[in-house]
Length: 183
Image (tube, rainbow, N blue to C red; front, side, top):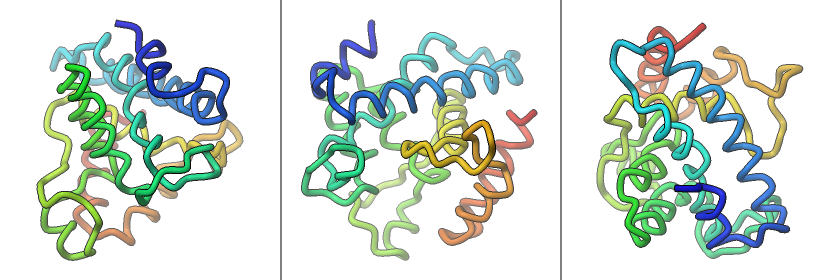
């Protein structure tokens, strides 16, 4: 499987969105593969992690995100489940789960209700080790290239602060990942 070919099925290779998705996906893949080495005893699937990291944001196509060159009708937070629908539709359901479950530190059904999020009423929390690794790695990079560290990477403290607005459960889950996958 070639994730760039899959992205090219939905995005013009010369578009800003394609460029952003590939650059961000590569950053996430690199960080995710380093994190996977920390838990090699759990035997995470490295090829799957690499490919899924490149595909995890495929759903931005359908969001109203003009800064990324996307002019869909859905709010940005919907890109996870929209990506799952795209990936399920081409026979890649395991990749679809990565897409759906990488938002924040995962979104529970209770969070969807509590915060009145425009999402399907189901748990979207990472389950497999690969899902957790990609969700963790994704938090360190912004698609707009505005990471706050010199290398473009957000610090653990910055990520924790941004997650705090979405509840302690998000912070706790992320901190568990830092303990498991961190440097």
